[in-house]
Length: 487
Ligand SMILES: [Zn+2]
Figure: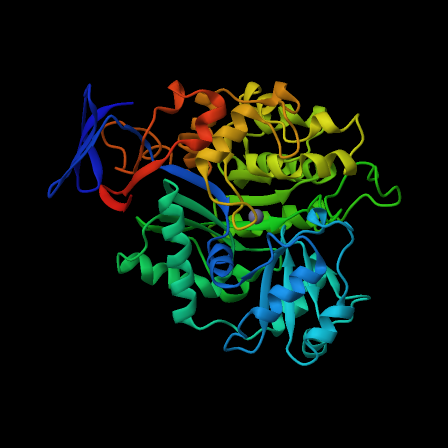
């Protein structure tokens, strides 16, 4: 839309019609964008800021098309100060062999330097023997899946506070260029919170961050982290995992994988354990709960747990989210609405993974994958994110994925009945996404009293042909009335 917006103390004071473009008038400046549209700032409601900062500062294997190319890329990299060579992003699905790499050639190339390389989905790690020796792990061939990676993570010397701050800023600036004004940051280590808090207090954080702290092993409890408010940084929730991911066959399914008939995936938490953990968190003061669930069995288990929470004395007002909500059995779709559970989905995963999903799931179960429209039609508010650094942070690409649903390798809509309208897709990246952190009462709309978080685009999304939405450009991003990015 076009509008003239007056901002005072970071909030919208007036919204006036404008026929020629968008104008933002603050106490100190006037910003004019002739012919450009203004939208509420985009939210990425499931992402990993430090992960993106790492990705932007570590070796990237994302474009490598073979194990050999990965090793060559690693050999060209500089060894960081802590002595460990870290890479991210390998994806054997892009390789000719489609096989997981092994440590044989990696050991030959790096006999002494510990090397660890995360798979693109973060659920598998390729390590050499030098790393395993230090960490005390013993994989069969240099591949560690999910919890098996913990010993490696624990063995790596921590980054310094200065490095951490630099990586957070690197990632947050990248978000700003994409029109993102707020990120729901998942799996936050308690020891990172200080860097976020101090950056926010210094006014150095260019976006708003809602932290969801690690909880799988009671991390928050061990160090006594509790929720805390703030304009730019808020510690808001705790995050659990019910299962792994589909690519590494860690997603927990109700019946076996089509391409691995003895495997139903990995259950990472039992229902009773999850219920007890959530009750303890709520009794300690937390009011937002996020649980990762990808497979249909994991989604059902989390819904069962959430049902117990809703029936419990203290559970009526708890904000409950399922992260990914990727494969949902038809009987469970309406339970999201009945139990007031937010489905926090990543349209970009559907774009990247549809063909992989066709291998993992048979034809009967494929229609359960990435169900967006079915959830919305039940009255569920979808929150949308990218899960960066796994996928790039780009709400416009996300909106395009929601409305077109044409995955990589396809030339037409894939299960097109699950597409969203442009309006629904915009909600999922703005006010609905804010609802998933209980901030929709003052964010996600251009209305008087709302926070002055905006994105300026060179085209109106609603008037752009669906297949060209991803080409729309972000011209400027504002948080609390302050310009944080402009071309
Ligand atoms: Zn994630």
